[in-house]
View 1 (tube, rainbow, N blue to C red):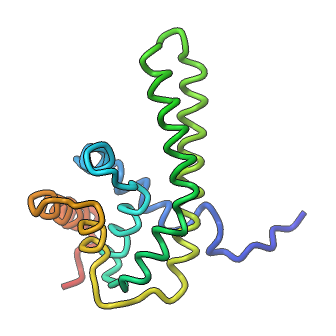
View 2 (view 1 turned 120 degrees about the vertical axis):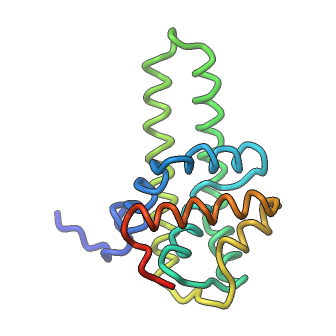
View 3 (view 1 turned 180 degrees about the vertical axis):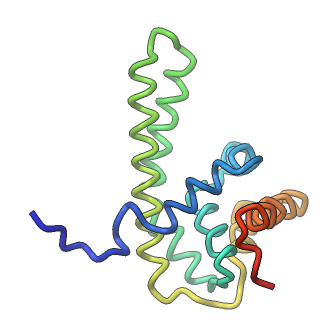
Length: 166
């Protein structure tokens, strides 16, 4: 069977690759999980916002709202799976195999969420606002956390050799 999906709908897209790389960068995982647990932030949306910042693109407020609404149904599913995984984690080692299965499923769901954001991202959502600013506003991130996030992105850019933009 031939895959007739457009390339941008693929789960293996530049946003997914960036997300894996950036999430693994020193300090990023801890920061994003703190934002998720303390501010109710959607890690996938924050990764998308980081990606748009790295690409030097601005987003309209409407573009942000479309992205947020577009991933809301998946967000609820991922949250349920995450809750189950965390509960199973407290019961380890007796639940290790089910925990690992749940963890893999959660990652697959996040990959699908990022694929949906990637597909939306190729549509026109350009604007005059930083996606980082819009995310910070939505999640109520204090200035120190906003500065920390921007610093993580700048460090990532410098480390990866992408710091060529002004």
